[in-house]
Length: 192
Ligand SMILES: C[S@@+](CC[C@H](N)C(=O)[O-])C[C@H]1O[C@@H](n2cnc3c(N)ncnc32)[C@H](O)[C@@H]1O
Image (cartoon, rainbow, N blue to C red; front, side):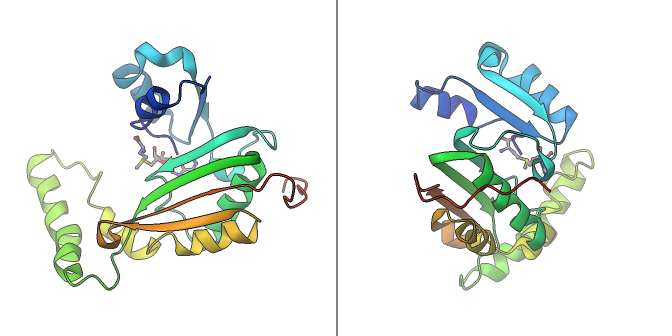
């Protein structure tokens, strides 16, 4: 769910030990866009994999680090369970992960105004000023359906991963970070 890889420059700058990034995205255009517009100077360190993460064929224990920024909101609950299973499968024992997603800020006093902004104002801004683009007009529906990262956290724990959940900006985004324990991982099952 790499999209245009806005996070890669930060990762590569902070962690010189990272030799390469495998960028998985289901969209061909996203890979082209990422390469053309943003990452020409670091393209030798990025391998592009056009694939559905929920049906990926990466080998088990492949990754030291796995990240997803804002790629999860379209996944329903059963897809989140598949995501968790695959994340646990591709991480090396001791490997770490971090994901963040736009969420519905349940319990926040200003939530009604925020929902109005997501559901009504944002689509209007796109319609009037962004030539009918629909990048953000779906955000209201996606966040209503996705809610937050809690279900995914439970799925990841079921797969034997250590998980810490964090709320950002009063719950307008939620994130999970954690680790695949070294040495006491679940046995890797054969692929579906
Ligand atoms: C909001 S974008 C992510 C933005 C990204 N953080 C960036 O820097 O551009 C979500 C991305 O997830 C991808 N995506 C959604 N479902 C996917 C799946 N099942 N497998 C792989 N990619 C998926 C979409 O194609 C899209 O590029």
